[in-house]
Every structure is written in structure tokens, then in C-alpha cells.
Image 1: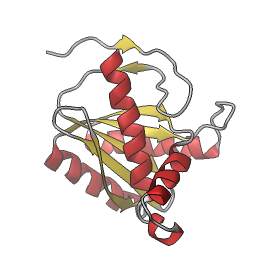
Image 2 (image 1 turned 60 degrees about the vertical axis):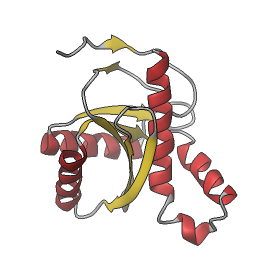
Image 3 (image 1 turned 120 degrees about the vertical axis):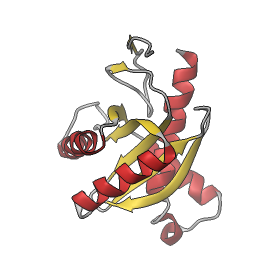
Image 4 (image 1 turned 90 degrees about the vertical axis):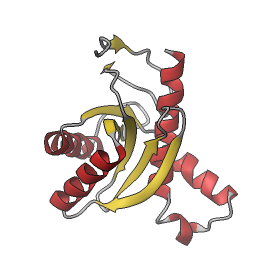
Length: 163
């Protein structure tokens, strides 16, 4: 039995959610969509911790959707949090439109509910954390998208614990 959706409080900074959230069973995945790579993180079974996974190539789109669908089935993902790249003023631009279009295609291809979440500052925070861990710019390239997705998911999971 599903619990009814509930309104979510708006918070400043990355991880801010908008709209309504449905409580689902299963793990939650976070995606940081980019034109070249899709950063990926998946929650643990308890929904407490975000774990980065290797990125998925964004092109060709059909292949990315197929790979993500297979991963969602294998990992028991029941909900997707998709980063929405807003401008500093909170306005949706071209990149946000691309993310929404991808989210619609993902939901249609996998049947998994997609929730859009403000991703401002996640890439900057992820780059900083990777630098602190000793990774140079070249090493960050393959990790930053999934590190951003993990930060986004962890903020979402933490916010959900407080609601």
C-alpha cells in the first residue's frame, strides 16, 4: 500500500526539491544528466546512504535508456531523482529543458517515476571533494558526474528523513 504524496518544503541550495514526492518501495537512483555522460548514484537498501556508480554514456540515447532500465531492474530502483540544472536565479534554461526531455524519455522507457531536483552547486561541491581526496582534473573527468549524482541523492535522502 502506498502512502499518499505530500507537499515538500522548498529549501535553498542544491538538493532543493519542487513538486510532490511519492513514497515508493525499492532503492532510489540519482542521475546527473549531461550531453556526454550521465552521472549515477544509487541508495543503499535502507535509503540512508548514496553510493556513486560508474557513469553511463549519454549517447546514443536509446542505448543509455536501455542500460539504465536494466540497471534499475537489477538493483531494484523504484524512484529516480534527476538533477535539474537551474540558473543561479532559479530559472530553467536550455540545459534544464534537455534534462526534462531526458527524464520524460527515461520514465517512458523504464516505467520508473522521475522527480526533478535542483542541482545547483553539486558539480562545484563534487569537484572540491574530489580535489580534497587527491584527484587531479584529469582523474575527475570520469568521476565528477557520478560524484555530483551522489551529493544530489544524499541531500535528497537526508531531506526525506526530516520530512
